[in-house]
Length: 361
Image (tube, rainbow, N blue to C red; front, side, top):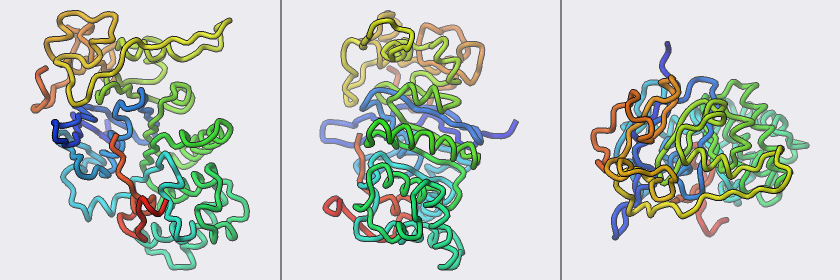
């Protein structure tokens, strides 16, 4: 069996503060096969975006990856030089951000920004670069692509700006696309269009994709596998159909109950009682213990490992209810028991290009 395209093992990303580290991502593992779509789902503040930015190498001070490995095609991204990461970003691995207009440089046309990416990672002539721009914009459903390539970001609606960002992310034909809630800043109608567009592109191009979302419906419709995050922890990871049919972690079960069913004869609004723990003061043991209806003493005495559940070594749950089942080895530095740096999209794909800042938005 071939190695997965992406293998994340015991990844921890913390943010330094005067009061101690914020454990935004804390000992997480998952894999992604070629052509697979993985959904990362959880409440706001659960660490989804930080996890994705860690994979992309976009964590900036005061954040740092403090433990774990991120293997892409058997290369550990956590040990690669900045120059090697710059070559990888926007070329083999690309990123689509939440707010498109915040990650496009307002001072340059969208065509110039896409050609920046092409110039950084390809040997295409200037003429061929512009032909690629027109092809991409047309494929993304932007009318009059030659004319619109000369437009500035503020001349696009939110939905069209996100199409430009997707075009930029796909410019160099990456193998892996990381999408951080790419529809959250758009209205409902446009959200559906972007979801359909990304799904079509993934299938046509054979992309591997990690999709961060808080919408379980998006996961059910678009993803092959899913990772459920809570308080910086991936508490369950497995195939979408299996997890939806028979969740193995109490948090996953509670989260699924909050999703309205089309079979309900009356509106039902289930919630999860309580609040997530402080990421600077995580409890000993399971991070979900204070909100879990099945919590027991064992939940409070040690951080649970990943148990292999459902008879499937690729279906994992961090819950002591599965004690006795096979476990994955713990991280050597694991405890016993959303910072969002600004960057333009072109910078994330090239780590260079034409600078912008908060004041430019």
